[in-house]
Length: 605
Image (tube, rainbow, N blue to C red; front, side, top):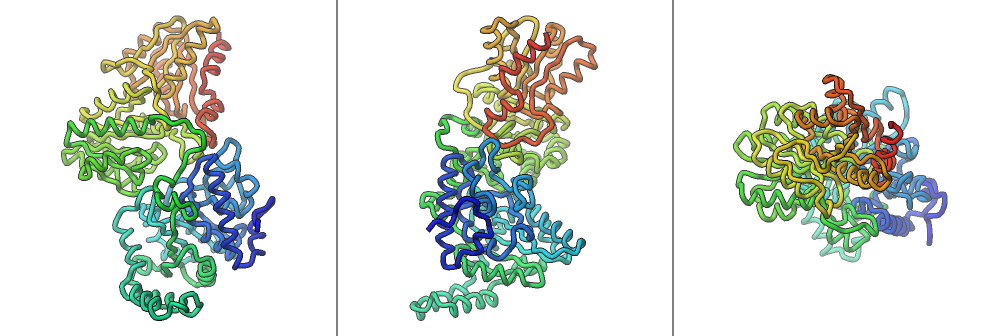
């Protein structure tokens, strides 16, 4: 039986009999698996919440009520079952639907997400707006167990009773973030699911009433016993009624509990246990591997993350003070091997970036050499700690910024556009942007010896298989090729682009430019810059970063303040929220191509 047809919306779901809903769940999973295998995306989380999503759309009106997903990794079933089944095949593709909730994409999406732990705060805001405007609607925060341990979620939970408003919190507990969840709060959730009296009663029922275990009476008795036997928990103390835990794949019971919460007079948290990756055996067996999958046909090869982690391991073997941090991203930044080799010197703090940087600062103040591996997009959540706790104390913390620059199909929340722009304003912080593995190694060796904070940024994807630059010998800007009339300066991925532009110029009879690798973005190599600006009539800067606050802007200030007569061409990302597409499509969209650089130079001549 095919339920998912052209034009399917949540109203069609309301017409499906409850006993047929598991068949709908099977169809939704099939669509998700087929699409993600082709386009890539977050697979495990979405497979795990299919039944919960169906139940939620049976109980709540997604147009009038406000359903707010946390992060949005788990929003694929919701997209399929609202108004986007027909377009779901375009997931994460250029001009297609986003991998995360987007208000501009659909009236069913009520809050943009992409980073964790924002849902409860946003739900409280929506709920108070409802109260103040005299509206009638339900407000639901749909949050995972890993997101619940972040400080922002705790702050929101702490404030619930102060708002004197009603919200419903649906806790999807699959016992995973990207890797296994960590921290004391995960123990609290486990204890709520494993109280000895409840477990003993459940075993009694199974032993003495095996033939009646599926009747309605006994499940109700079990739920009643849970209410009396569960330990006093954090939610009760915060003024939030706790119900659960329940089987998140039992659609009828999920509908029943959500209906009760809908009609309850105070804030409620519904705790559901789910299986991450459910419906795909390999994903159930290895939920970490299948948290996010790459698109079909993606070229395999050594990545920047792999190279950086291996170099860190080599350095740690020589220096026992080196420790490594990650915030629930061990697999993403490829620190699995480091964690096994140096278990006492590896810290996965969970989704708690701010805590991670301050703990690293404490270790550095205590005589260690912390290395923090973090995606550029998530460093945004800890800029206060970078400034206040690390830079102001001039502590030797190395920030390894993964996924810097244009990062592809994850969309606007996951682009690494701000680390240079913000970092340039931070005192004592040095910023490096290597372009190949040799320069990455050189930067990391230098950082391991520096008595101050160092930020090393590198992009998502494959590391260049060939050497692009030359040894720096301590210089911040390294000349790769000489030239006449004009010079190209690039950092990170920009170096490969300007090398292509130089080759193109030679092939087309255009003035062949000099090429410089801006390996150190901050502080600017003043002597090298002076020599370049005095020699060349035109200088072009290419960087995989926002132009606002970037190296090109720094160079422009030097040209203006120093009275140089040099004409400056800047190539980078303009003042926009970056759309999801492949990295190559994004570079084409924003003019970060050899063709655009050469055409711009010719047009200026």
